[in-house]
Image 1 (tube, one colour):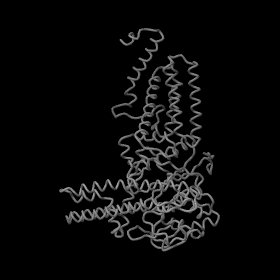
Image 2 (tube, rainbow, N blue to C red):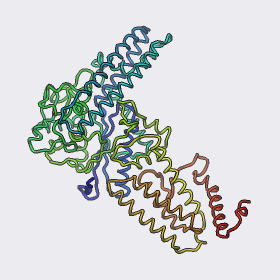
Image 3 (tube, helix red, strand yellow):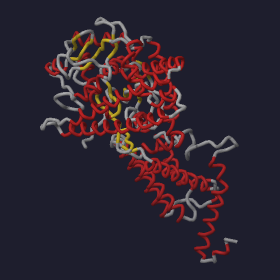
Image 4 (cartoon, one colour):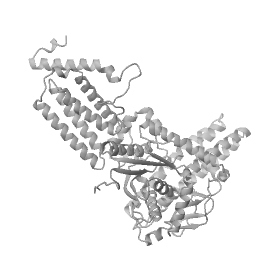
Length: 582
């Protein structure tokens, strides 16, 4: 791959905007993949390369997913309360059957639609994306079959309760209720409360993972006036048009003026799947657009959706416009870095750039994009829609934040990675390896080096040269696209050589060993693996019973070192091993 030279616009100052979460549900490890990854890259930029960063993250707190989830939660709650009051279990049974049948029809129709053959000249990437979408649709259908079996079991029970029936078929019942009654949910506070709850959970999860707080947080709902003005600016510049209360971006008009469209993922036409992904589940038909590739800047709100006043009527922002506006408001008309998951490359990031360039009338709004690779589980992307996710809180019940961070560090940040027992176990093994090293070093450092002979032996000099070489390799790997997986291996190799030295050298040099351990600690601290200010080691606190874990095990480590030294002496003197095993 080609490597681009990174040059900030202004001196050592770097402006960085990262697409934040759509706060409609609990965050899963797929989210951690993005935000932990960018936390690591941010720390490298700030603490290793010493750039001055302005780091901005947005919160999408109005969106089709939020509207649907908040609305359906409200409808399920009301339906459950009403059903419990009426005590008509049979009515709930019949409604559940109706809802389940409707959901099966929808899922089967999606599979059949995706099985339709593509034109012979379809690009390979689009064919692969279609195949992936088909596999996901088949997976969802198989999951629904399992749900059907569970619902059937519940309905066969003599002592079934109303709550049990609704819970078993919750998704299907919620979809059916939304189809019939969604337009009646008009209280904007329902949507606001839902978004705030999961925004708070997001930041709590980030704190638990050790992710640094952003310098600036911006919410969509607090930027609606600026969004309206920005859209008007795009219209005034000739790149937007109103249609039936919505406003769309004129992609053909944009290209006709000499601008590039779809820079990140070049292509002629937007597929139906890509348009659906970009416009959301509540989007209207495409008949009101000049061209199928045009995308919404402002969506006319339908009954049951939150809305704000605008020159084009009551509505809400389109998905892509929010980032263009908020990043432009805080950072300006040119960003050094824009980050997000690789799935946002198109349509989201391409459309963001088009809007910003149309508004600012510039040819390049973002100088460098950083796209974090997907997290996969059992061959499929981890996602809410596939229900194959593990929440961050569930993961932290089984693994420590340090272990999860090491897991991501040991993978290329911009490539897909699998979340599995193997990847976590590999991270735990590395953690143990470093812990043992720090323990061994601290044991050596407890010796009084002033009483020891100084200067360097050939072994000392060879270890020094190993340290120098490792530092060069680490620096080169960080310069080369943040190759943290290589850095971890370089540190492991350095530790391995140091361990060999400790085993072979009768009187290891404290100062040299200390320097190596401090360097390993420094790099791990840059990555966020080491917390606190200890010069050597992870610096973990104990159980509150006075002293750290390392202090607790220190006597045992000292005994081991003394035992090792006795073995060396005995080996050199060719003594009987029984002399020191007494």
